Every structure is written in C-alpha cells, then in structure tokens.
View (cartoon, rainbow, N blue to C red):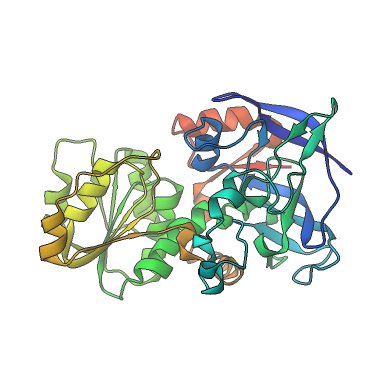
Length: 368
C-alpha cells in the first residue's frame, strides 16, 4: 500500500479535510502518479455539493498532473519518470469508445462520478480502516499520489511546467475543444462565447487560433471581459447591464453569429445563445446545469432558421492527441492559458475554493 495525504469531502457541502490514507496496490492496467499540480474545477464543487449523485467520503480532483512513479504489468503507454496529465476515464470497449468517441463512453458516469475502479470496489483506507472513494474521474488528484488507468494518463513533454498542466485534462480542453474539435469554425467566421470563466476564456483563445474574425465574449464580470479582450475577443457584451444581449450581438454581426459556445450552464443563457445565431448557425452546449434543468427555446426558430444545438463533453477531445497539441500552442505563445491561473499550496485548498467561488480567481491550481 502507498501512504498518501489527501483532501477528503465527507459530507454534502462540506469542507475538504486533510487526511493520511493508504492507496491499495496497482492493478495491471494502472499507473501510480506523484501529483505535482491539480486544477480545481466547478465539477469538483458540483460533486461536493451533491448536485451530481456521487458517493461520499471521496477524494475529489480531476485535473491532475505529475510524474509516473510506478506502472502495472500491462501498461505500455508510459513508464516511470514520464510526465503526465490526467484526464477523464473511459472503458475502451463500449460502442462509442470503439467508434473513436471515448468522451461519450457508455460507462462515463460510473467511471468518472462513481468513485470506484471499473471492475472493483477497492478504495483508499484511512487510519481507522474506513474506506474512502478514491477514483473520481479515475484519478482523485486532490492527493499527493494518485492511481489512474493507462487510458486516462497522457504523456507530455518534460520541457513544459508540469504543475501547470492539469487543467488541460478537463476544463481547458473542454472550452478549447468545443471550438476546435466540435464547432470547427472557418477562418473569417463569427462566434460568441457566453461565460468568461476558464472554459469560456479557453474557447476564446481557441477561436483566435481558428482565425475567427469576430469573437464576442459575454459575461457579467467586467474584469473577466477585459481579460477576454487580452486573450483574443474582438468585442465584449456585459450581460449585467441593461442592453439586450441578443440585439447587441446582432448589431455587431448583422444577422447574428455563425457559432456560439454556451459555457455558463444557465438555461436562459443557452436560449440567448440560440437566438443570437444567424441562419444555419451552430451552438455548442458546454456548461452543465443541475440535472433536470430545461431551457426556454423557440423550436420554430431552430427549425425555420436551420440552427443546430450540439452537446459537447470534454471538448470532443481524444486526450492523447489534443492535450499535447494544446501544450504546443502554449509554448508557441498562441494559447496563454497561464493567464487564467492562480497557484495555491495544496494545504490551502479551502481558501483556494473560497477565492474561486468569490470570483477572485479563474482557475486555481493546487501545487505540491
């Protein structure tokens, strides 16, 4: 067993408590990673607050990065000493995985929110021999060490700052991939991004990479809109003001935008995004509201205008291909995601979350 220190949530809406735990031994397809950095994502807070039904107590964290310390007997992708980013889990054997879309794995929810190995209920244990769920997104990276599977570790170059790379495994690949992989905007096209958090700002940087001529950022936070301009937005709309967001976008683009990305997870904002599209426009639904939420969308507006609404999970990313590409963009100066980041010591996780929830930081990264 491996001794670790982990931040554990034990009850709904509870604090993250530091605990000394033991990880059970590796299975043949698994990888032991010493965590160097872990991003905090809104999905971690969704799980903490039980908006998604996840078992507690659990070690959360699903944007980990670090160094491989040990590999199982069947692992061939990585070896001891490799730098890796941890990403979402997938089974590799269901129809959607075999079709090359593992982000829509038929076992996605069980693997990423169930908190257990795919074929075993073995967990980490605390000093009183009580079990703690330790496979959130098949990694549980709010810990000094993490066990992942060969499928959800991504080998990355050693000349990039490993403690910074974890968010590429979820939030940042989600926003950028929604544009690059899902919407695939043509050069010279127009796009509106609703929400200027880490996912939305990543989408804006991706839109610039794709050559979009008009990039409109929509948010209620003036500071984040200012940062959006620095990262590539050509226009901003403050939706907290009295102006009509849809009318303003159509004023800037004549008939509306070719593409939109909705990252806020607010159903009414999705309705705005649909209305802001031009004829044959396409919107990517990225933000996740609580289960059961519906959006007030005019069906005939979608039908008559030929608009498309697509759901996007994890940026439609094949992580082993897409994450190294994002690192190349970053190293070339095209994708400065470090401007979204504030670093916190691992022990300060609760303070980091407070700063995130207060809107004082966009993407907190815990460093070890």
